[in-house]
Image (cartoon, rainbow, N blue to C red; front, side):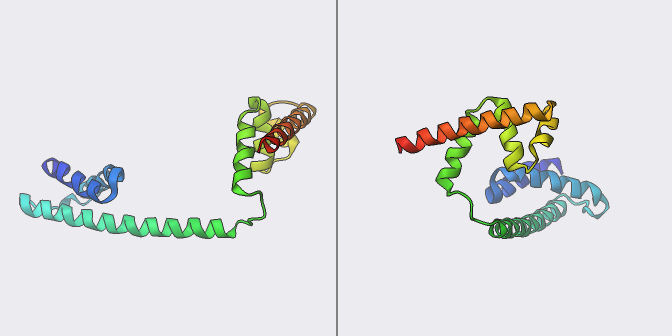
Length: 152
């Protein structure tokens, strides 16, 4: 079976690129589990492995379609009343430029939905310290975004 490995890897990679190595690994696991079904004749074993490879590709394609549909459904279910994409990028950029402790409190509160006290608890600081950090972060973000808008 090892002799057929490079052929099977090429078969997968020509169809799915770098994901081919994962499919080859899955194929080898299947072949090991179903060792009793593997023909003893080399050529028949080779063709059996290619048949399993073809089925794995079909299953992978169906899985990719299901994942894409789910991602689209999730994307469609999220309300789009937020800022436009350019503004979102500006906000993300401004958050990245904050002091790490300030950036973390902003992301925990706004992106993860935690309260300021919960975010402080995760950061290992009292709620009063978390509120102070949050206030400083808001001021820094307001300044950065105002400055960016004035340049635009």
